[in-house]
Amino acid sequence: MTATLFSIGGLPATGKTTVARALARRLRAAYLRVDTIEAAIVEHSELAHPVGVVGYAVGYRLAADQLQLGLDVVAESVNPLGITRDAWLAVATEAGAGAMEIEIICSDRAEHRRRVEHRTLDIDGLVPPTWEEIENRDYRPWDRDPLVLDTAVLTPTAAVQRVLQTLSRRRAG
Image (tube, rainbow, N blue to C red; front, top):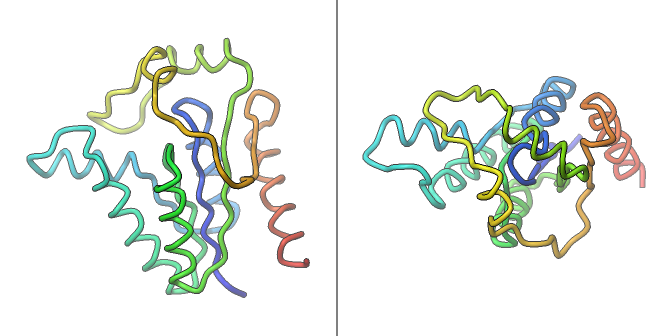
């Protein structure tokens, strides 16, 4: 069976990390988080956060390595622009792998804001964006139809189940 790249994007504090980790655990897939990559780059270099395209570029290369080994990859990042989304798809295509684009949203604005203001970070040195910064972020609408998972109404387990059901239908179809 061909490896699959699961490209997971969405605004900060929508639940991307929670869903992505649960999916990677369930699939026993490689897990790549651009925030982790960027934090390591900042910690071990002269660069300051945000590091621009560097974190994504490292993520693309790491994903390609894993896909070429036949491993599924769950790649999680804000993935705000068409250019970053296209790049993840190019990684899968060049590796001869399948791809599934997933956008994580939180449709309940009050809940999303609560998550932003009360979240606990698990990466040392990462400075979380404020609610204002998230609202003003350049996050462009998708020009394709990703699988949209709304964490305001789906538990992480239900979100993973939805991904697996969609994957099963695609592989059967």
